[in-house]
Image 1 (tube, rainbow over the protein chains, first blue to last red):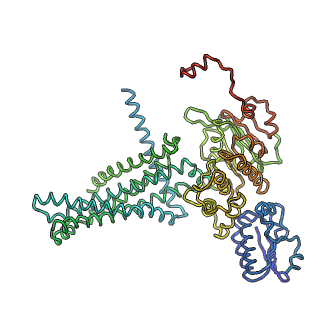
Image 2: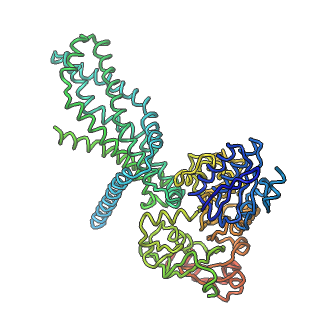
Image 3: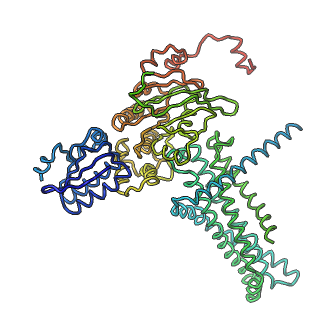
Length: 109
Length: 262
Length: 269
């Protein structure tokens, strides 16, 4: 469970890797909310996430909602199979903006 | 004859077993108490349940007992021409004996029965098992807050009881029968020693622990007794049992504490 | 024994014996439950299903034998180990076992509030996600006493999966439910297995749902495992007791007249 932020042109890229579980999601939540408070669009790279539990999903939901209120773009990149299944089960795949490459997100900004 | 002996033996065994379980529960509760997380909020809620909601009952019974004592003592003391001892008589009997005992008995009837029924129902509907399966200790979550709340609220209720009972005695003695206010109050203040107050306090703390513990144990260990398989009827059975048992425990320990401390 | 290395076992039970007084409830149960699949433990009432479940959950101490769950030996596990293990297990009890003083949402949140340091907002969202999964979102403020049988079971299920457990136990999911509600619950169980990759253990005697949801079936009878296998294997089983169970053979009409008369008038045979 690692999380690093890379400023890109016009947005911040949050790279997650490993397992996002109940120990880690408070940190994830804080990082996301901080970035949104800074007023920058956020793209979260989920490509290296091997597992995400519902607390991680909940943090993403809260982040997405906060970003939406602040009128900021908020995207999820390269969501992996396991995480996607959880999103589908909870019907969140219909809510989030999902991307397969960062370029796509940048163009929509 | 043999059958009778057998029955006596069986009863004794069950009794010992239950006493053992109750003491064991006390140890478990004490053990849980020293370990975090501490549940202040739950304890406060239990204090409200055991203490707060018994308050009106305590006030009414306190004032009634005080007035009855006033009447009785007045008619007795009048025969010996020493009505100036009325304040002392009422105060001593209330603070040393009647306050703690009556309060404890009221709490048994009002809150103790509810505790047993609640825990018994939680046991037979698998709620206790569910807690255990969630890795939440039922001792800590269910039993400990109740015992602590009992330990805190019974002395407080006793203080309220004492106060209103003294007022009741004052009302009968001074207002109704015209005993001089000064002699009533002075007699009371002179007679009551710190020792008497301490005795009342010790009693009420012990009663508080005793009744909540017995009532908790009865409900909590319901599944280990015959009542465990009897559903709602079993709950009513153990509730009656808990009330009887804790009332007896209060009366008997009242005697023991009195004997030890005086 | 098909699974040797590909599938690891979530639970391994060896020679489990449980005595209750002088009665033997479980008589040497051996059972392995593979990870990530649905294992249904079925059997008639009084066969020892629920005793087996209580042993696995650590609610009952077996007389002898061993139970290994996710690598932890349950007998002889310290309290701490047991607590850690239990956080990976979710249990939906037969009657729901919801706490009657708490609302549906509070019931579901309890494990999170007790065991995690998650923010309130995270807990709220997690609760709603799980409530939505079991289709209880509109009823989150109801008290347990206001719920129907199906709603109670669904709430219990939501509470069981709130911590995203590796193991989910479901005791009699269809008892007391009408067929359509119980079918909904079956679908939900399958969905959970597929998307959350849980190992699911269902204890039931309801045949319709057994064959719908099970990857593996263990049939228990008179304190022993009569047979384990896939639903097809169980259907083809030649074991008489299993066939009886499957086909609910009507009671024999031909009775020994004398014996029957003696039974009715209460004379011991």
